[in-house]
Amino acid sequence: MTALLSLLLLGLLLATVAPGLLGRARWPEREPVLALLAWQSLVVAVLLCCVLSLLLACAAALPALRVAVFTGAPSGVEEAYGLAGAEGWGRLTAALLALGGVQTAVSLTREVRAARALRGARHAQLDDRAPQLPGESAAERRGGERLVVLENLRPEAWSLPGPEARLVVTTGALQQLTDRELAAVLSHERSHVRARHHWLAQCAEALATGFPGVGVFSAFRDQVGELVELAADDRAARRHGRITTALALVEINAGRGVFGSCPPKQLAQAPRRVDRLLAGEPRLPVHHRLRLTLAALAAPAAVVLLAMAPGLGTLL
Image (cartoon, rainbow, N blue to C red; front, top):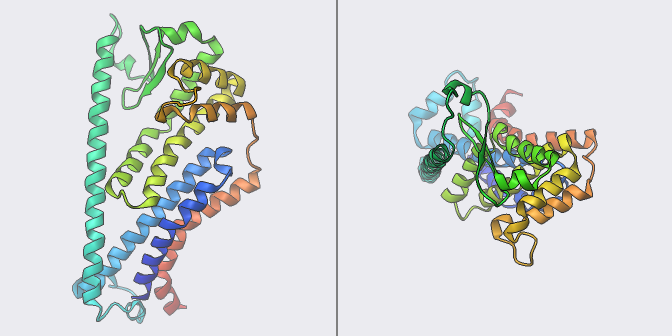
């Protein structure tokens, strides 16, 4: 039972302490893509702790399953895990972890279905406002992100992900933005589509909704919402310049009250994004990025090694 308890304690530690440390770090604003990797690795490590704990708990609760799990293992490996005689604790732990697994699956399924339905409705609405042109085949429309221009005096731009991705701009944006600013806006939205940011957002929302009391999942959802925007800003800035991207961001959001004293909650990060682009802080050195990458990947690797530790100790 030592490995089972160790996995549960490590999962609790990662879910409670690590989010605060990562959330207070300053480097994610300079390396948002790397920060997304770090948050994903942390969440994967927590989920691995739960999955491997569930496997060991089921093996402790069900002798037949324990025999199947350790079939072919060298002599002494099964005894090293100390699962025999712990059927009671194994059943209780397995039941709780299995309940969490079912809740995760249900929440993820509900979130994916809701997002797909919303995306389908928005695509249908967009097709009504911008129907297929004469001579434009369906194959041509699926050849990449289709640019759609809508009649609207307010300067706006957004993307609709999916098999038939759309990049949408309004006539107000075409009139108010320069050519370089418009190219920066489209590069930003194209980055969201090609990096599949909507998949990451759906998973984060499903975990936060399914487990509202687990801080790591709520923090993951909030950080994903911010970091994907910073990552898309960086892509646009690398192609079209930081000043141009910042000016485009200001023009798009100027009429929404974003830069007032009480900006809307969902747009409150826009002024900080503009300040970040104007500050133009350089990326971290390569060796620093490499260390952070290895540290991020070490979290799930440590979980696997901890689960294998009793068996490896016996073999060594």
